[in-house]
View (tube, rainbow, N blue to C red):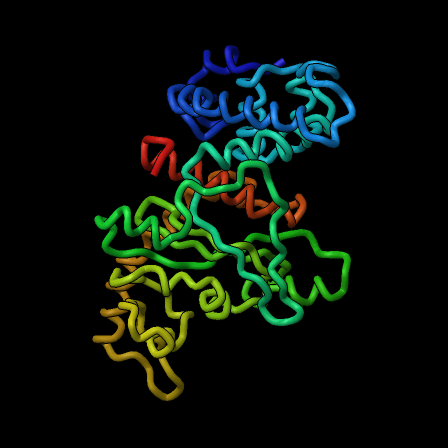
Length: 322
């Protein structure tokens, strides 16, 4: 059976399987223990529980192995059947541990990005709200508060990323989730980043939602203040919609009005400055759960995205706090 002690003998494999070094894993584990214990105590003392606290079978795995199992799922995106074989658990036990216990605890411990709910985008493209989780209060409430506490951030990058999903069964969902850009069914998430950190992540929307529509409903540009916001050329006419925001983006060629050599040089400069957001997205996709076709429940996608972004922020910051 796979264990933390056994995997520590191979540091290269440890980092490859979890995305963290041994020292980073140990720091995360120490911070996770009291949060996990508090959530377990609250779960066992809930009014609807029919058993007394302490009743029921004990955990088969210790907390370090449960954390290792969750990180391996996010990093490698292997099936629960394979994880069950490696850790000696049933698939249903792995699913409950990750979804009901470990992910809510990680969301409280890691420096996860800020997130506000989008509400409805049209009548057919509603952003599905994530399930409530215990202890959901954020340490920092909004992107605006985060930027106020860190005035050294002079510019932010904004982009939308799409991840393939299995073809939905419902006909209406098939229409709304089909992305004309990717030519397949996707989930779209908008991220606001620095050169290394994910500051804000919108709730996911169907892939057919336009990037500019998502930007307007997210309200991010109302929170950045006087900072420079770097966008790609897909955000057409955003300068006119938000004249108070300092926007930098490439020039888009128009019909019968091709780019001049000066315009092409300007676009190359903008691409070099904006490439940092692509690097951040590439680091997120090192966790294969955000790179492969997503096969899980769409209602839990935002929490998974937040945990992966929190792990990226943890490594970039070198600490578990903003």
